[in-house]
Length: 180
Image (spheres, rainbow, N blue to C red):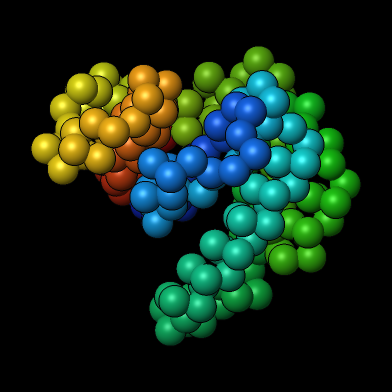
């Protein structure tokens, strides 16, 4: 999940374990999130590269859509600063090169400090967890109808992903990001 200081949030980049193809129930949510897969369900160096491409595309689209405002602030020439934790997948020269060529400057927080320094952990993680807890199990009847034909695993995956997307939309406020 990624959000900027102005409160604009990107669609979540959700990694689902062990999928070759996106299941039908998740295809219905593809307007609200981007999906990827890895054997473990955790980020890999290749998925970080994919995320960087997704990030750059979103950044360019954001700058073009907000062009008039940004031109006054010279934001097309100004670099974008991307704050990341120090996970080993960030050691990907292709990803860093793509970011650099698109005027994105990466700042990596030192290990074991993100719970104090990282704006996401400081201002959004707790509200996100609270929203997931609050929204969990509360699905509109049309969502229940969609899920009624699914096997238990697919139904659970659908509800978890749907809840995460809704919770992310709920917590992405300027007020929350300013608090960080």
